[in-house]
Length: 311
Length: 166
Image (cartoon, rainbow over all chains, first blue to last red; front, side, top):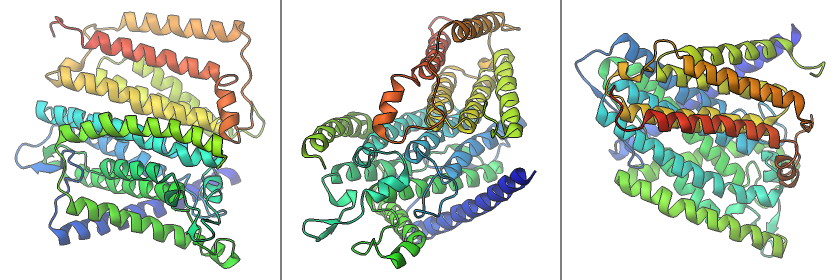
């Protein structure tokens, strides 16, 4: 009974914190996009809009709700393995990096289901194309995330951050992955995160506005997770540069981690607001023809390089 | 089964996995069957997490709850004109049930007769240990996931074949 109560309390607290975080990121994104006058199209994937008039059937409404849940719950659950510092984490996972990416892979399923629910051939086509794009960028993102894992020799997020402790180049640069030869992986990861944080929703009847809110929250939660994972893999996680062995800096770890993550979220939203959306076919070409093969080739080169140089 | 395993969550997830698998087999609507498959994958992943097999749990999420439902939903959405077109053409999916029971019997028989290497209760600590485990103790569970993948690919090929009047 005690264990059940303990688990229930942890689940409720975690859900409240993660939901609050989703609302914060959502409000931040809306404010920036409204100020810049940009729409929500993001990376060129189909933007959400509502169609006035015809009310959805109960079956369509149920399917849309299921689509929102399938998109939202994994995106929020992906926050659970995140490590805010060496000691502050919701649940320790030995394979945290892989688990987060696996949960993020469920997002396109929600989009595909929403496309089916609308019963519109054009929506189904657009969403299928967007889902294929998400798979392409997801594959490239997974491959780019492997180089810090290889270097740390572990999928545990704490171990990956610990491998970035200290400085190099005679103490000039922090030993963060983004400031090392892994900058190529970081660049690929950043482009993939930008593409994956674009909106993938469909034109739905306006009466189902609550499902659009669910899809938006899912999108913002995913953006936060991808940013937090990027900070962990490439930007030193909770480490403060140059003083990362100081006990006070260790205490400030969670605040530093959240600050870095929100800065990355801001950067993603700012890029989304400034850069014109890519056409869908070009976006797919970028994912399948450029980023996926480049990240695969770079992973092979880096693996050999790391083995030879013993990084 | 370890003595410290939380029995209530394990029982709930086991019932969810078995019940979902039965619903997936007997439901007529293809989209609903896909959603039940997703539910089974999530429940299986939860079971694997309880059994300290984190990597396998993640792999099941990635494949069973990510790639496979996406493949099925895309195939159905792009080929079915109306919601009713997503129904299987048979009133009672006898063929599906027979194939499911036969596959289940084959797998259970194989598990009982073949000496399967036990998966360690301690998860692999690093990538080298993980790589070694993938080709030894974890090989069997991954082959089982491969069977599911193959079944879905065959199903999608059947669904999207040309010349079928719906």
